[in-house]
Image (cartoon, rainbow, N blue to C red):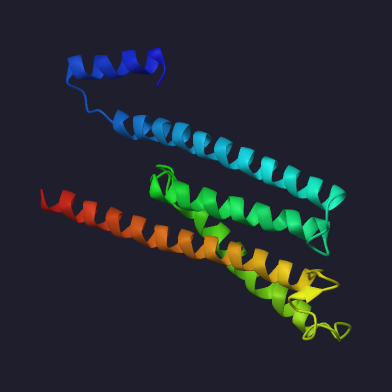
Length: 179
């Protein structure tokens, strides 16, 4: 909260005007906590990806695809970010759940359609034999399925958080109607 908005807040208290500042204060707290969680998550992703690239370049390559190995770490970081924000109640702003709801749709759609498209590809004759391991490395099929599963879990956590948020909002509206 800036000094000017704090002065306005104090003036409203002195003049006995209706105060709508708690929403703004709550939104500022959410933004700060979300920024801390985002910074921590990005650092973890950068460090994990850097170590992964170092191992893939200098040591034994553990995954067929360099890109998909990095996507796995990105999906894990995104899952952590969603869970941490859901736990701290900073996943939604005071404006509602519209942006998160659209993200849920994209996460569910992509997480289901991408593995199905790979399985239905006619050129993938070795799909069943080499799903987990191919050439002593994690196969690209398994890496893609793992990353899509992590994104799907993120979508499920978001959907549960949205339903919990809407339920709380409905209960608070009913309490305000009763008063």
